[in-house]
Amino acid sequence: MVSPALSETPSALPSPEARPGGATPPLRGARRALVLFVLQGLPLLGLGHGLWRLHHTGISGLEVGLLVGMYLLTMTGVELGFHRYFSHRTFETTRPLRAGLLVLGSMAGQGSALLWSGVHRWHHAHTDVPGDLHSPTLGRQGAWQRVRGFFWSQFLWYLDAPAIARFGRFLDAHRASPETLLASAEDSQESRLARTLPDLLRDAWLVRLNQRYGLWVLLGFALPAAVGGLATGTWDGALGGLVWGGFVRFFLVQQVTFAINSVTHTVGTRPLETRDDSRNNAVMAVLTLGAGWHNNHHAFPGSAFTGLRWWQVDPLGLLLRLLARLGWVWDVRAPSPEAIAARLRR
Image 1: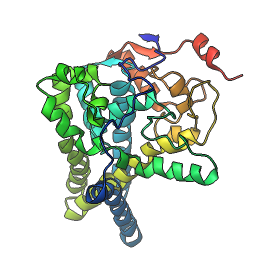
Image 2 (image 1 turned 180 degrees about the vertical axis):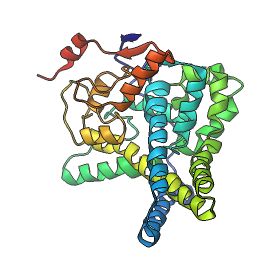
Image 3 (image 1 turned 45 degrees about the vertical axis):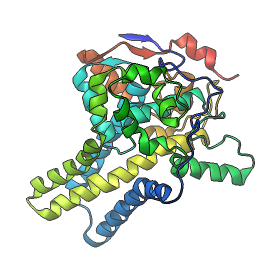
C-alpha cells in the first residue's frame, strides 16, 4: 500500500531558532585529532593498502565481488535503513528486516542508527540555515569560501559535532529512563539530538540493538575476510577480502555518503521549490542507490521514493516496491502527482 508522503519527517523537530551545539564546545586538541584519524585517516590508509595491493598483485574476481557486494549491502543499510526508515519512517516493516537494515547500516561505520538519524533529522529542521551541522553553503560568500565549505562539509564537519564521539555513552546513561531524557531541558548537543528521536528511543529493543554498534562495524570487516578465506582456503584470500570488501569498501561508502552533504547541496539541478540549496545529481543518485535525487528528497522528505520521474533511477525505490509486493513492507509513503506539480519551480 502506498500512502501520501508527509512534507516533513514524522518526528518532532526542534524549532529553526534552536542550535545543535547548545553549551557543548567543539572537539579540541588530541581528541579532535583522534576523531579525525579514526574517521578519515584509517579509511584512507585502507584505501592506500588496496591500491598498493592492486599494483603488486592485481585484484581477483572474488575480491571485485566482495568489494561490490559489500558496497551494495552497506549502502542499502545506510540509504534504505538509516535514511528512509529510521530517519524519516517513510514505510513500516517487520522486526527482522528492521534489525537487518540497522546492522547493514552500522557496518558502514558512519555512526549508530540513532546517532545518524538524530543528525539527519536536525539537518532537515535547519537545512542550509543557522544550526545546520554540515551545510556547505551557509554563511559562505564568494568562490573561495564556497570551496572551503565544500571540503568542510565533505571531510571535517563532525569535528564541530562532539556528540559524534559521545552519543553512545550518552544513550547508555539514559537507557533506563527515555521519557526523562525526552522531557529534559539539558543544553548539550547529545540531549538536543536525542530529543529529535522520541519514536526510536521508546523502542527498547531497537536501542539495545543500536548500542552494539561497535560489533556491527567489526562484522563489516570480518564478513568479507571470512568469505575470502573460506572461498580460497588461504590466509591471503582472507586478507584480500578484508582489504577490498572491508577497508576499500568502507572508504568508498563513507565518501560517497558524505558527498550527499557537499555535492548535492552545490552541484546539480533544482526542479522543485525548497527552502534550501538541495540539488538533484544523477551521478550521485547512481552511486548512492537513489539518494542523489536530493532536491526531490528535500521537497518531500516523507517520501519513500526519491525518483519522482520515470527516468530518475531509484534502485532502492524499486526494491521497496518488491518488498511491498512480498508483504515485508507496508504504509509506503509517496507524494501525489498534484503535490509534485505544485512544487515545480516556475
